[in-house]
Length: 576
Image (cartoon, rainbow, N blue to C red):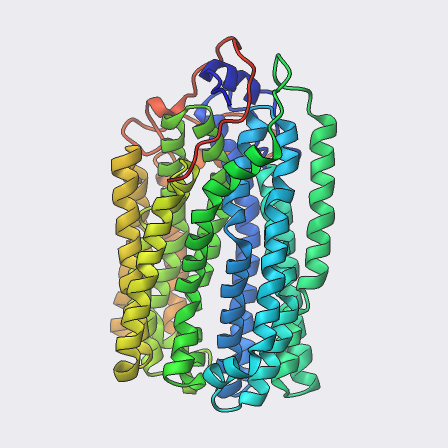
């Protein structure tokens, strides 16, 4: 297909808009401040969902740790980790594919391609998930013998129950990714972050009151996927119909239709490497729990899961920003606005750090209090695990959404190399370190893999795209977090001990100080974009940051649309 000239693409994009949420599929005409306002609105919604999901996720682990024995808890955590790895396998990387291609098709006015893209992604996902579910059910006894050595019978029951719900989980993820591709963040926030996890928490409590059977625990955790996939499907259909019913035709000339083979070929050439990369990414996050259960014991797996749960809280917060960032970067890349994409990358890097570092610093300083909350049996090595991984996460979250930039620039092959290398390093070190050092060895293995992945992607984004997360905003956020949640709590801990009261006493003034420092540095951090959320301020651009800040400079403004000289159509850039 022909590549539209930048002016034509921008003119086309000016007429294509999302139906709700952030409107990320909308036009890019106007200033970079307007782009940041859309990011702020969508990011704020995602932050609410991330906060609720983080609390509920932590509550789920806390409840299981207190309501069930460490043996059952460890087996459950290993089984659900295996389930999530298989769900990632079944997903085939289609979330990244949908988030890249749907905004591009919509921004360039190719509605027909946008409509056909979702079935192209969804049908293979359902087929793969069904095959995976069958395989998991048939091998349940063998799997249980490795992850539930203390009670293989109950472990096998867990695995069989989870196998039934695997296709539903994969379909839900794909449908929610499609709604985000249309510019709506609400379905993901409400369905996946709030409804599903609230139902899981309620189900676990009900199962514990009803029976001590581990199979019932697995059923209570997995059952919410059924209503959630139905809600996701209905919501996607409503968004799709609303968008195509209300948006006016974009191109000045009729869009040349793409053949189904060309559409599917472009989608899967990009998505196929991402499928393997996403499997590696999910396995990287979950395989260590399975390996701890297999190489050590389910009890150690329970302690390791509790000690590492804080990572999910910060990941949800940063993912809230990245969910809005992905379609925005995809649109800007499609329109040839690399400077605008670089600015979004830098600003979102400072926002990610501002959200994640308080969690990691507070957990590292208060490790004895954090791990002790799960019960006396979780102390000891659990504290070392928490500190090791909190330190590694400080490095990872300070370098921005590197993988997002590679993916949205069509470099899914590099993402695959990074994820597979990190997974290989982690598994190799787990096998070597878990037998002699237990969960501390698993933590060291995961930290090494995380640092390898982070540094590889950071160098690639810098050398290939010429982009960097560094800036005055990032430095300000880091200094504010270190002062408020590192230095202050550590000083009080050294002076008064590591009790819960001391930690709370340190975090309250630390939080006030942190908010004050963020307010002082709001221009550097481009937090003025959130002014659009205030009554009467929606639609106003972000204020121009001070010179030299992350959010400032020439990248702040998107070029005015040039007259359309060619018809706009989808541009397919193959991943390498």
